[in-house]
Length: 98
Length: 283
Image (cartoon, rainbow over all chains, first blue to last red; front, side, top):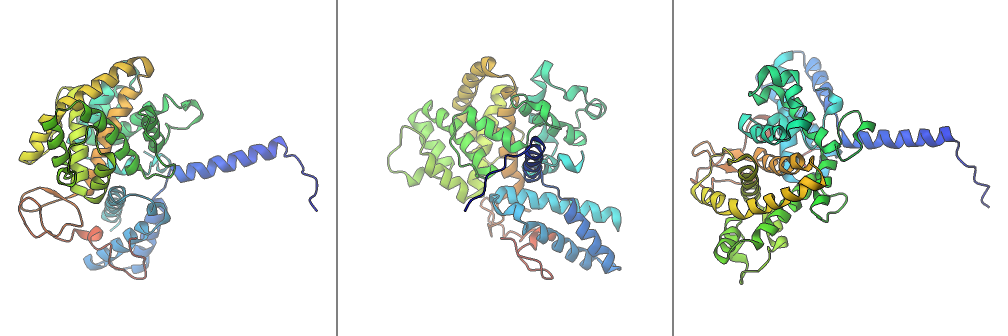
């Protein structure tokens, strides 16, 4: 048995609209900062940073980014450019932090 | 530029582009004269013409122009770059799947322009055009209209074909609108293609421009910018041969120009397929 449908109030409707827009904005604008944050945590945990370790950390951060859901539907050129961009961000980050 | 302004499809391209890559984009924006805001930007005023120092302003300006046709007042910044490309695709009556990648959208727009230019070419130019894209030998009789599906398959299969195709169109647009071609180290056959196809593609662009005078001035910035950024996306995805400087795709083992054995890559990007400490592989 189906109960009576309760119409949404204006406030509920607005709330749903806000959530929808928020999700849409998140889809449109991807923020790479969390990946950098994780790279930093890895670096801090490692305590001592040798060139080999630095490369390994960089690989780890870039690999994590490359396997993220946001990249799955991209074409090869977009993927390549995004990975290169992210790699340069990680390079900048490490050159400032280390 | 804050993290919130990061645009998945635009920011990486603008961030990696060099001075020569950014120059045509600035040219297209400045041609908009009264409606552009770039020349009022502090960083532009301070550093122009060193485009690499105000990449954020260039990106902002492109998105702001895209916003002219999108009720921009409800947004914190311009629309996403994907929306701008979709808008340009709609302008060209391009049909595309809703979930198409940005590359597919760009390919379809460029194919539409090339298709119109192809109809303005003579028999010899058509054959050369198809040969330049590497599909001439695949087609037995020279078709009257551009075999879009064949060309699309060819440019999707080969990074070099995709780059050549986008370079030819972007160069012709630059010549038609800015009065000069792109600054790019091209081999002999590509240089010939540049001069040969600049005419037909230029006529198409000039024809579109006359219509845009009436339909919407923002397209005079967004259309050439979308074409140029499509080319930059392909260019930045390629690597450079250490011996002769030719561009090559990651999948190539040897340089197609000089035969040099190519390195796997550099630094972290090269090692992407290698599984590192429990991280997932690049799919």
